[in-house]
Structure formats: structure tokens, C-alpha cells
Image: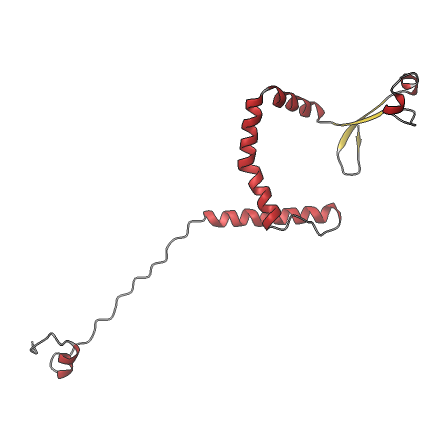
Length: 152
């Protein structure tokens, strides 16, 4: 096992020169090299098992495809189109990682804010009672339907 420059752990298989020496496909397979080199992920058995499952069970593959198209792809579309992930303008993996994490965090915050229940802020205030002077002629002008002044 070996780790490549990106940090992925891989299994490396090499053939002997003696095994490839008399092979009729040597030129197309390894070219001018002396050995055949194959690099596989340490998770290759899992990939192979899933590939076999998806190729044999078409209904299962379609179900997974529908689930993915409802859950994952809208998120990726939003990140690419609205949250500046079409191009990462940083250098190195660390900068790109920060950029992607900040975009994902802003997506999650926007989504979270949509689900917060906003309580209506209702302020009840009593209106001041209008001051009516019953003994003046101004009352008759303000309330023309009143025909007489009533005093208590």
C-alpha cells in the first residue's frame, strides 16, 4: 500500500519482467516499460460490488437515481449557480476546501433561515378616548347628527 500526492491510500500491483517478456500484447499493454503497474483504491471491492448490484438490478438503480435527483443534485445546482462554485479562485487544496466549506455553510444558513418560525409581533395599544365637550357649540359642528346638547 502507498499514499499518493493527494493523500489517497492505494494498492499497487506490479508484474515481473519475466511474465511480460513473451506476451503478444506486451507492446499495447506496457509499451517500452519493463513491467505492468496497476494502481487501485483500497475501497475497490466496495466499488465493484456496488457496480455489480446496479448493473443487475435496474429497478434499484432507477430508484437510487430518483432519490439522488431529488436530494443531491438540487443542492449542487444551487451551489454552482448561485453560491459561486463554478470557479474556485484560490490556490491549493486548502484554499479550495475553505471556499467550498464557506459556500456550503452559506447554503445551510439560508436554508435554516427559511425554516425558522417567525412570531408575529403584535402590539396592542389603547387608543386615547376622544375628549368631547358636551356643552359647547363645537360639539354640534363635530357631530352634525346631534340635534341637542345633553348635559349630565
